[in-house]
Length: 260
Ligand code: NI
Image (cartoon, rainbow, N blue to C red; front, side, top):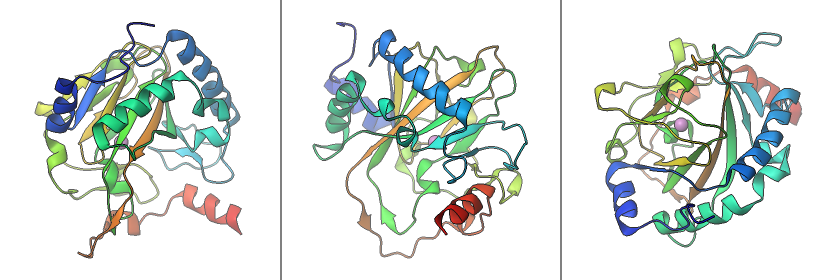
């Protein structure tokens, strides 16, 4: 299809490096998105990966039997391999190599489901705040909704230029270490919202401050998140992310129980 962005222009590459994010109108056909959506809906209906800690509530305390306000599945392609094949991956691979270099490769990372009417907001954070602090990263995330999204559905919002800073202090939502989601201070007067039609996506640096509002609409919001990066290198400055050291989530407990 001719309206698919198969390669970024130099202006788009420059914009990504300047702002720390970019919005692309179309990287996949409607047919492909509908195919992905079928697999996506199936694994959320099955709560795939619950036992192993891959499925959990990102924004709640995640007790058994409690209604999840922001269900997430890590490594969704483990449960639905069809998510990790298709033309869209070829398109994204060309794009991430333009942005990061030839070693970068896009892979399906996780899926976040924001239910109609009660799906919780994803608070301001930098993705790297979730990761291993002793490594240096050159990486990005690709956020691909499987339907149209606007502010009321929980589209992505970014603070331009915020990727040029180190990781700022984060803490668990409500300071509750049982909640997986992290939050940090952000000046949201500078936020740029990125509504998208089905088939579009946003890409952002691992340090870019971003947020997605609650889903107050009548439609479920499905997002598939892919990652791409260069090989990590060790840091020697003893960086610590205290907010991760004190986490105590039900997800971690299930993961540990599944391992033993
Ligand atoms: Ni994020």
